[in-house]
Every structure is written in structure tokens, then in C-alpha cells.
Image (cartoon, rainbow, N blue to C red):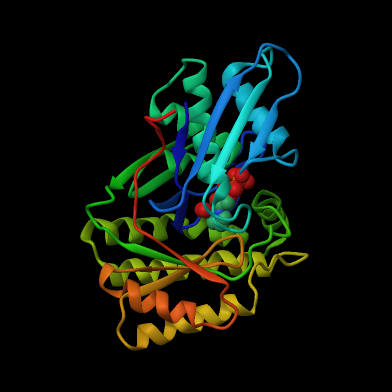
Length: 318
Ligand code: 2P0
């Protein structure tokens, strides 16, 4: 049995942890789930109690094993047989493309299926979120909001993928793994960035503006709040000690490309996560123009295009 989940891209970002041990976010977030990129997982329990085996895209992988095993323990308990976990993705891992979101959403679903404990979606999203905050959002499709409650998170879809079918063009500017994990970077920002408290305090305003923009299908309003929230999150990072800078020259060149397109009235805006890739969100009418412009931007290795998709699911074909 294989499960599948797609990455999501936050327009109002999760950045900061209220409770590090339980991995509870300090702020709510709002994201879009993609359809063209995916992580697939299968979890098979073996006869013995030895070590788990993790195979990622056909190759043994030990780097992620302890996090993956810990996630399975949360569902199947510590006293469980060893598991063989197979994972396939059609996009670069650990490069700011939310691979942990789709991977852990798919892993939680596959594990719950394997032990016949398919809980309700929110319960599974909470387990995934306790391993990787953004993974909770990949259980839902379209436009997704995550609220940071006192005791637990809440996650739900506010508008389905067909109800406002935006497109996303991802400009890949580097394919290697990122220098500092988002989790470590968030903890550093909370400890050292002078802008962190105001980031947390203002987040409800950005969430309200984004939610309203989605409800009204107001692209300009969504563009304004998304770019503002993205640049604010990166300002928090840049002002931390030592600074956290995920951008490279091509990231900035891509921002200029998007600005040029906006000057020509193309309906497009950018967002950037914990990595050097730029994600351009646009109306379907602008997809080709945006892709061509980003492909021609200096330093862009390749581009990927995606529409919006659904939440994590079990695949019918085993
Ligand atoms: C987001 N990011 O909202 C933000 C924006 C990166 C930048 O969620 O520490 O890998 O595992 O809970 O889920 C990436 O964070 O972090 C992330 P952990 P995760 O998409």
C-alpha cells in the first residue's frame, strides 16, 4: 500500500515554535497545496525487531532514519517490529520545497494504514505536525489554514483547489540540501532576532487579510499580504545572530523578474521559504509568461509548474 501527499507552500508563513518539545507553532499559517509534485510512501512491518530500513528514491538513506522511525513510533508504539519504509519523490529533497511536509504527511498516512489505525484527518494531521509543522497542512487540499491553539493545532481547508485554481511556478536556483534546517533556524530566530516578537504579534493581521483575500478571490490583496509576510519572515531571519540567509543571487534576480512582470500588469507574486527557490504564484492566464521569464532569469537551473491539489490520500494501486 502506498500513500501520497503533495507539498504545500505557505503564503502566510509558519516561523517559530511556541513549544519546541511538542513542536507546536508560535503562529498560525495559510498555505496552498500543490498537485504536480508528490511524495509517496509505503511502510511494511517486518518479522523481526531490528532496525528500520529507509529507502529514498531507490537508495538506502540513514540521514532521515531517526526522524522517520520516531514518527512511526508515535503511531505504532516503541515496542513494534522493524519497518521497511520506501519513499519516492518527483522533486529535489531538502531544498526549500517543503519536502518534509509531503514526506511526513505521506508517512503518517501510510503508517496509520499499515497498523489499521486510520484516524480522522485532523488527528493524523496533528501527528504529522508534531514531527514537521508544515506537514499538517499537506493533509488538506486547496487553500489551507492552520491555527496554533494552546494545546494543539487545528487545520482545515478554506477553499478547494478548483474553487480558485491558481498556478505556481517554482524557480529552482540550487538543488543541494540547505545549510541549516528550518527547525534550528526558527529556534535561533526566537532567541536572537530583535524582530521576532513583532513577527508573532502581527501574524493574526496577515492571516485575516489573506483569509479575506481568498474568500473574495482578490488576487491583488493576496499578493500584497503574501509578499509582505514572506519578506517579514526573511527579515526576522536576517536580523538573527548569526544571521540566517537562505537566498542566493538567483533568488534576488527572480524577485526582480517578478517585479518586472508586475510592472507589465501580469497577475503574479512571489514567495520564498527556507531555501533559495522562488515560488511565483499567478493566475492561470499568466502561467506561460511567468515560466518563460523565470526560465530566462540568470542562475535559474530549472522551473516546475503546478496547479493546486488535494490533501494526502491512499493510492489505489499497490
Ligand atoms: C512554512 N516553513 O510555513 C514555513 C516557511 C519554512 C518557511 O514550515 O521544524 O520543516 O519540522 O516543524 O515544517 C518549514 O518547516 O519545520 C516551514 P519543523 P518544517 O512552510
